[in-house]
Image (cartoon, rainbow, N blue to C red; front, top):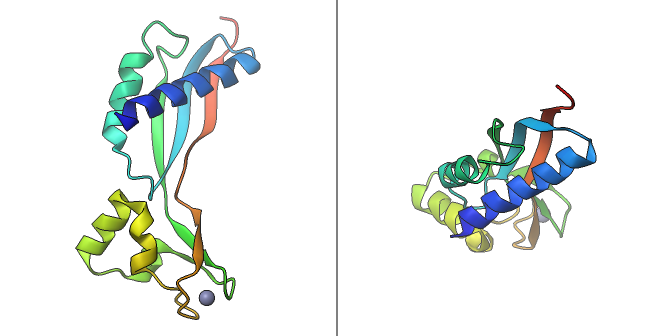
Length: 136
Ligand SMILES: [Zn+2]
């Protein structure tokens, strides 16, 4: 269960960050989820809701934002977004979403046609912001 270990990691890092800022209670955690991560947001949310019980994040809301995938060509340095590519084929889009590694078999640089590009956005999951309370 990849999603559950992710939920655990998100919760742990939020609490660690909250303690660093001497917060007593976490109220809101904003999480950015890369489009190419292939993660079921609902499962991560569900995991967080059950794991947060009994912690300082018990009353916290976990808010997810999707980050669009973006690429940069290693050949000509051109950068572009996945959503600008007009991938009309639903199957391709689904494949890329669930198995991000296949992205290189479907996509070429729109400027020079090179298959040699890197994923510069949309791959990770990270905490963007936390909000909490110090003393009551
Ligand atoms: Zn290029």
